[in-house]
Image (tube, rainbow, N blue to C red; front, side):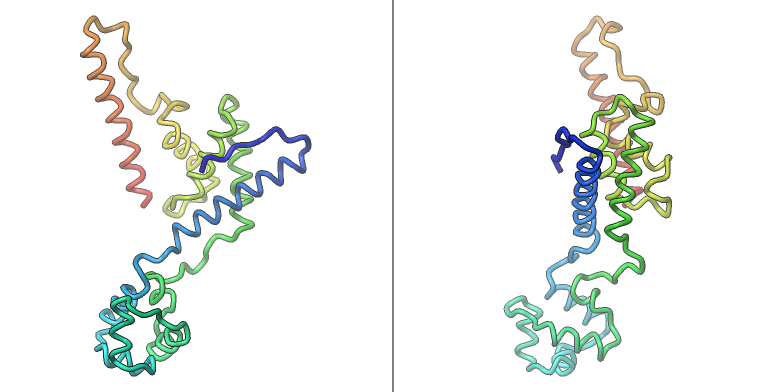
Length: 215
């Protein structure tokens, strides 16, 4: 998100702006977490197959004709919500799984906690990275909030530092990656550019591996 901070004249205005940005990142996170894995009719088909049910069986549970159910699964007809609820109730299934293709998370992050985490991360960055501009701080906070850190709190200092590395390409943590080639060490400009490109590939590869680990 290309949002930035305007000059704010008071602490209340700044806190309100931070809260609005935190809320925006929370909504984006919710979209990523809970968006349907596929179209609803495809998720319905997957649910039926997982339960080992025939199309005619599901049609009966949903109190529609088999032809109508065929149209549901093919995406040719919208699926009434009451029919989906009936299917979930009668099969003991998870309505989220039928609609979204995934079960609901047991303890989703609340809007208030997302905003508080966003503010906490900004405060940490303000102290630990005083040379970091506000837009970069916001991107780091967004990155930290948008990823699953495998059980670690999103406001943990180690998590925030990793988010800084991933967001800025190690610009603030050069000690954690090999130094880039130095142009004065080269007589051959072409070789310098090749080595620089290889160094960048290593940086990008390390970032991608970390992102893959985060899911």
